[in-house]
Length: 532
Ligand code: GLN
Image (cartoon, rainbow, N blue to C red; front, side, top):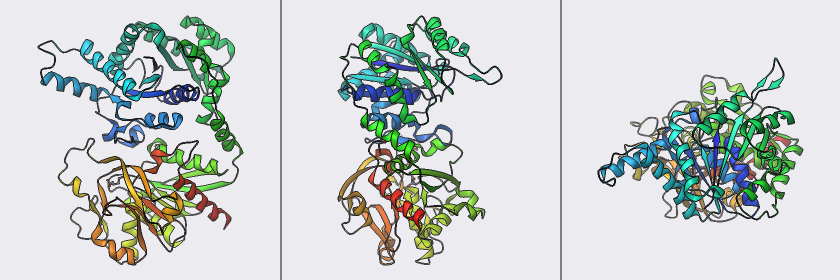
């Protein structure tokens, strides 16, 4: 068994997930199978109940786990699906320990952080490694080494080395060198403290990754080696890159892959980074701009729609276009600022929950339909499409969704049968991958070029079939359904050049080097607008 632990120092949010993902990509590219796990210290059982506004998007795995956004980075960088063993929180660990205690599993012992919690952490690390058939697991510990809630996670990482052998465990510490503008210097002091803190837990890092806004001078790298008692080649410079997809290439350039492979006792085989090089080249050569309006409500934090944004941008690069995403606050449209919708080549209404901003999204949707602007609705965005059509084409003025107006009698979108009576919020939506059957004579079929697809879901509400016939005969088509034909999975409007909505989230399956067909088609349709 081989495990790499990635910890963070100084600050969170400095790109530890991207570093971990890039190392994974390099190992994977060298022919070794990689599994990823993220351990977060907070007490939510999973990120599913957390506001994307605070924490970034909730990423959904094939098997329906609601996970941290880093799981999306891992999947995109290694091009493989992860699962419910990839995302753990203190809440999830505590819940399990308490459940075992209530079941009497601890046979009268005093149940403690050490050894009961730490044993559970190690058990889950082993389970992830064994069930995935990986050659190496990369375990990222969220936050920083100072966080009180991380202490037992770091202790578990320390114990792991004793259990499976020094040679099989690698500790990588990712820290920040802040830049002081007045003296024009990158400072190492906070990193010295972070490393010292890590050492106080009994962990000496094998590699130190230094993040900085600027290129890092050699003397600083040497200084860092000194205070960590590491050889210079175990210090990795990670200055900001023009795009995150350059990070694997930069690490390769520094020889990190060879050093990591030999440290793990793996054969140093060549690594094919062709796909990454093509992607990065595409990013640098893309000139023509395609402007897409993202009409949502979590716009203050771009990470709230992380996968979707990445999905749009990378599909653009594949078409040699630079996709410029304009984040438009649906509430501002609602308040009458229609100028926000001008000069857009495409409009996307992403997923969301709750009634805030809904009317603004409906206005944006109508604007796209009437002006023949390409429109893509993801989950909530597809429901908005139904409501808008019912209101403005069928003339049902009060058309709405049960989510926003439960007592309304004209709800085009209503609660799914299986969701009725569900009270708990955590992990209870329709989650994960489900099959969808596509109608042969549809835009969806032109895009997917197949009739049987699988996509990931995260919702409670669905299209109300009581309106199906009227909507269909007015030109609103349900072109993809669940195999029994009951649940609307894809909707589209026949008179419009490109207006399509999906109840599922295709962004979770898009990969930077293999963009999703739906998105490629959307960008292509937006390009037409640029030309016109
Ligand atoms: N709130 C809607 C539902 O639960 C849409 C969910 C989403 O966009 N992910 O059905």
